[in-house]
Amino acid sequence: MTTTRYKGFHIHARPYQIHRDRTWTVDLEIQRGGRRKFFNLDERFPTEREAEVRCVALGRGIIDGKIGGWSVASLRPEGFLTGLRDGTVHRFAGTGSIFVNLGILAIIALGAFVLLRSAFVTP
Image 1: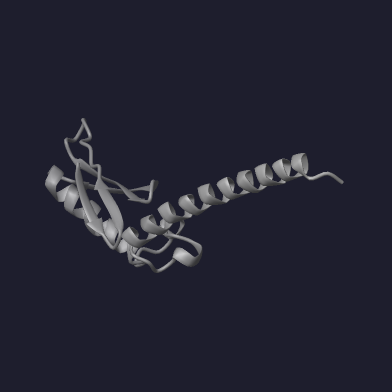
Image 2: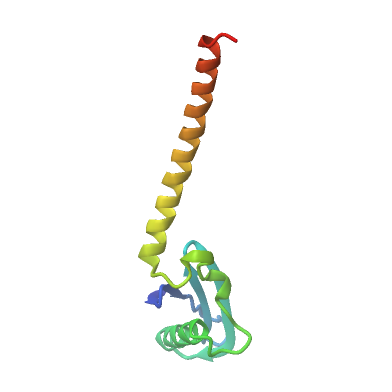
């Protein structure tokens, strides 16, 4: 199996050999951010290397939007993170979870303050 990085995606060439005629298939997986999609063709090649080269070329074509009917749009980032490089997206994702945790702590602290205040303040 060959893995190639292309425009923020990982293309995993996964050709396998057909037993009866000893040819190799064109099967690949395109992955990004923990999500993945699988693609294959009915084409066969005499060697594993030729099939891997075809898998990578097909994967690049799919990512570039040049293969009609096949898309990796569901693997692309969404919302305000669209258009950022992968490293930037992951930094924002980590920052987002920090803000969520800080928000939870602020709510807990506010609740504790209200409880303590009501215990010591007489009406």
